Length: 181
Image 1: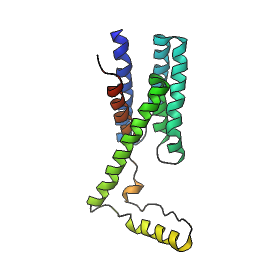
Image 2 (image 1 turned 30 degrees about the vertical axis):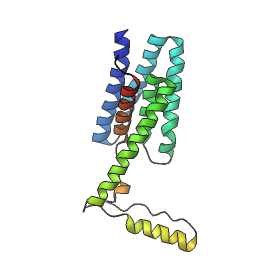
Image 3 (image 1 turned 180 degrees about the horizontal axis):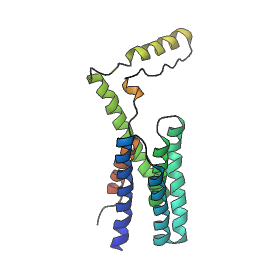
Image 4 (image 1 turned 90 degrees about the vertical axis):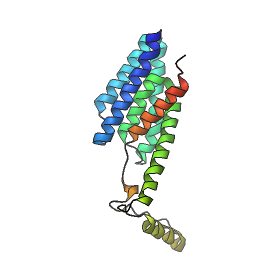
């Protein structure tokens, strides 16, 4: 019983923090890591919960993927981030995947805001004010929106490793959801 209560959290933590470290270093998450995590989650669900565990693992995978898939399609997150959340979903099931993904998105938003605010205090960052001003003036003058991509060196053009947000958000959810008592 104690082994079951410790095995799942330890494996999830190993998966998400390995992915976060890899994403920080290489700006990508290896498919082998995500696939191994998903396989381990499904296998663990089968061993611990039987046939019902397969359903929980598969629906958790689909929920995790579905929540981050729009971000990938809009270019906000990478495919590896969506696949990592799907892999985490195999361990947590659908409700856990949903809650952990929302926590991860919240953490990602806070990190992104900090990232953007850091540009205000950095002399080396290119300011987005001119670009935003031109887009607003064009909209007001012509009534048509205009998108101007970020200039090189502008903070809005840089990507941050979202696997870190997934690791922090999922870990926080696990601490909140699974008290050790």
